[in-house]
Structure formats: C-alpha cells, structure tokens
Image (cartoon, rainbow, N blue to C red):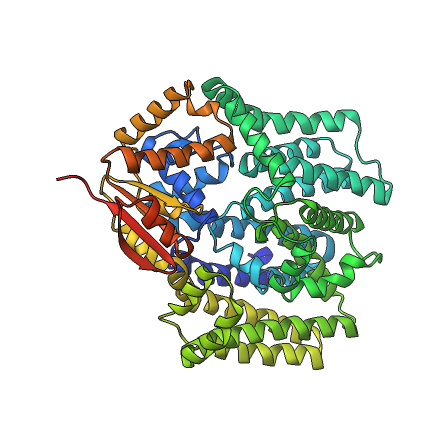
Length: 564
C-alpha cells in the first residue's frame, strides 16, 4: 500500500486515461484506409476460421503480418464485429505504453520526469489520438520501444540475457508491421555506437538477439511457409521494399513532411522537446537511456523523411522519445527561450484558427463555405464541403480556452503553466474527438458508409471504380460468393495461372479490375460499385447496365439487382 501511495499521481493519470478513452472509442465509424483494412482482415479471420493467413476480400493479403489483427479478432469474438472491438486493443496497448514509459523514466530520472512525460503524451494531439484509433502503429511502437529498452539495459548491466529479450520484442514488432522493425532497431544501435563511440555488443550478444528474434518470427513464418509456400513471405518483403522506393500507397510527400506533422500534430510536446533533441547537453540521471532516446528519434525521423511513401503515422514512433525528453526537460525546468516561445505561439495560433473555423461552420456555414470554395480545386473535396451538415459550435469554445492557456505559457512560462496547458489539452482533445470527429466522419464518409451497411446480409459483389477503399468490403459485410470465386478461377485459367498467389501485387491490382468488369458485363451477379464524383460521368458510359442508387459525401453507388 505504501508503494502505491508513492505513485498516486500516476495512478490518477491511469484512471483518467481509462475514463477519457474507454467510453468514446466505439462512437465513430472506422476511417478508410487503415482502420477499416485491419478490421476487415480481423472480421474475415472470424468468418473463415482461418487465423493463420491474413485475408482481404477472402483472398491472401500480403501487406501486413497478423499480430495486431489477431488482437482485433479476439476482441471481435468477445464484443462483436464493431468499432469498439476494432479500437479496444489500442486502448489496452496505450495503457501498457504509459506504464512502460513511466517505469523506465522513474528509475532513471525521478517521479516528476515520469509524470510529466505521461502528461506530454496524453496532452498532445496526435499521440493522444493514436490510442483511440484502430491502426497497427501503437503496438508496433511499443514493441520497438521495448526492444530498445532491453538494449539499454544490456549496456547498463552488461548482461547478455537482455539481448535475447530485445530479440523477442523485435520479433513481435516484425509480426506486427514487418521488417521495418529490423531497420529501425538496427540503425538505432549502429548510430548509438558511432555517435557515442560505445561498443556495446559482442558476437555472442548478437547471437542471443538473433535467437530471440527467430524464436518468435520463425514459429509463424515457418508455419506460414509450410502452409502457403514462400508466396506470402516473398510478396510481403517486396511490398515493404516498394514502400521505401515508390509512393505505392499514393502518399508521396516532400522531405520535410514529418517535421510539419510532428510540429503541428505533437503540439506542444515536440516544440518543448527541441532543446533536448537538438542540444548536446547531458542530463542528470542515466545518460545511456537519454542518448538512446535521442538516437531513436533522429533515426525514425530521417528514415521516414527519406522514404518515398509518407503517411502521418510513419513518424509516430517519435512520440515516445519526444514525450520522454520533454518530460525530463520539464522536470528540470530552467525557462523557455525566445524561439521556443515563438514556435508555441505560432503553432498554437494555427490550432486556434483551425478550431475557430470548425466552430464557425456551425454558425455561418454558407458564408464560410462560400469563402473557402474558390480555393479548393479538387471536385471531390468540394462536394464534401458543400454537403456539410450536423455541425456544432463546440470547437469555437475549445479554441478560446486553448488560446488563453497558450497565452499564459508564452507570457508567464512556468512548470505549473505548462502542466495546466497539458491537462487542459488532454480534456480539450477528448471533447474534440467526441463532439467534432463524429461530424467530420459523417460528412466525409458517413452517409456513404450508412448506405453500404444496408447491403449487409444481401448476396452481392461490391467493387469500387477509380479509387482504393476497404469500406465497401467491411461495411457491407462482404461475403465469399461462390459465383465470384468461379469468375476468378475462370479468368485465371484463361491466363494459364493455377492460383492467385502466382500474381505479384501489381498484377493482382489489374486482375481485380478485370474481375470487376467481367462480373458487370458478362454475368448476372447482383453487384454494387462505388465511385467518386470525378468519375460519375465515366460510370454512365462504361457501365450502362447499372443504375445510380445513391449520392452523398462526394460518392455515388451504382447497382444491378438480381434478375427476376
């Protein structure tokens, strides 16, 4: 009991975390692509009873390994196939992450640093939001961080067993997201050695890490190869390499993209961590851990700035070292420089303006949309903005509260002022996610998803034209139709291909389009097809046998009913 009393503040934060996170994770439909992608893979595991192979559309899916999807599948088995079950794993993962972050900092830098780090993590926008999502990255980040922590312990204790444990965590990370884990941990260890001139391993140490790694990965991939051959492993590796080489997921962005994401998304913790991340000073406590944190941050940021495919959550592994460094900085607070004040004011102003615009959409929607529309060149985005409904003015109030707390930090900075800003933002983000995000989702895809949900239980084939999505599979509870399987087998036979696993990812995309067109033009299979507003005219020309039955959120749906 006395030990628990020593950690009262942290326990209060954990209780607050559960109160703020659990009630809201299932209130908003899943977002396309990633959330729906993983949830659909979990749903198909339950439907088929095949928990070994990841599938999308009841076909092998090579882009992601199964660990996180298993967790979602278990939750769906308990809670049903719904948004809560899809996101609940990350609530638990977030809970564990906070405990790990607190424990590792408490031992080395004291209670204040540990508590402040938790406050920074929960009081900054994207780091808070990710534990309410249904994507893979929170688990991946925790496992990478666990591997790094055990490498730190190996330096501190000179015990080989920590290399073995680091290998276990690394293997689990690979089973979560792929070989990127090897690259990130390997480069972090290499640059720690080069920058700080510390030779922290021997051949036997690396061997222990490899044994731990293959103990985990060998078990799964060994069974996978025995069951499916080398196809999954081959295509899985090719896809991971292509993510680095090409904007394969249509997410090409400039080099500085992740800097902007962290600067705005991780407000205010990234700005306040900059002195520690950029400076060369050591801190009192364990310098080894602090150095590994800094190296991990720079490795992640530089690697994902160099790769061609750039997505917001690629840099999310930076959140943990940023939270730790900013927490350590605040526990040893000595003031804020002019440039840091300027950045706080600038990025804070961006958030206040954004929140104000969101609030004004409820008060003067027609005028605001009229001002914005001339600057939007994308027909799809324009259609979504012009169909805005069910908005509210709460963001305007949140913007005012946020402005006042930021102003206090900039004008009269102190530990107390910064702590209060983080607590206010933790509550503000929760209110924002519970009041505004549902409206955003409804106006972006909500009406379309509601229409898709009306097809549940109906034997139909569902496709998209001109864009990639998983919503038309998940929200229709797409079935594995015998007629559709026969069409695929027929088309494969015409190409003299025995199995779909003989197609690489590019050929597979072309084949999916062929299947769609064959089903529409040459069969009577009931079908629906979704397209964005830019393709509406083409749809009438290419598929005259279909009728438009829905338009909303910039999407349209065409269908052919079963023949009488």
